[in-house]
Amino acid sequence: LVGRDWEARTPCGTGTAYQRLLDCEGKILFLGTGTQPMTFYHYVEEVIEPLMPESPFTTEEFELHTRDKEGCTYQSKIRLHAPELSARRRMSLLSPELKKRGQWREVRIGRLDVILLEAVHVLDACRAMALEQRFCYLPES
Image (cartoon, rainbow, N blue to C red; front, side, top):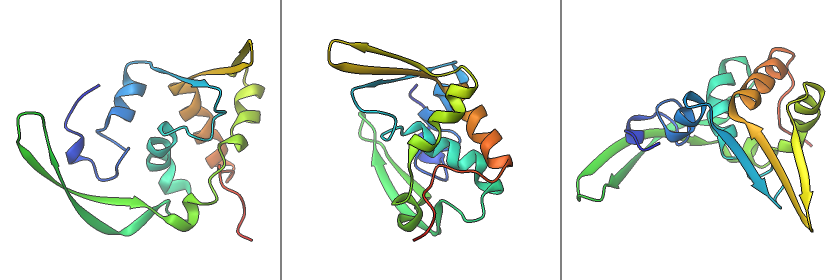
């Protein structure tokens, strides 16, 4: 899954390991956490951004420098996640859609809750929700 992530315009978007997870038909495993820490959703946010009423990313671009294991330094200009919207993100709003589609896999092993989702199913469900103007964010209070 290693690539040229420093060329991406967002931390988890097109050209990053999160897109490659989708490209290689990857799965996302949650062990005792629920789906809230699903970092793959940040890739989804970039994909559905044109359908969203407000961008999940900052308008400002930030300059980052990364160094690989050989010591080569790379410069990136990326938009980060908008903190106001990020604070309202709730991945539990996606669960009913995945369950309705029969794409939710969950089991309990002892006291451990295990959830397994296919990346493509997450993207497809989020895209369908976005077309209906439903997103994984709580309304503004």
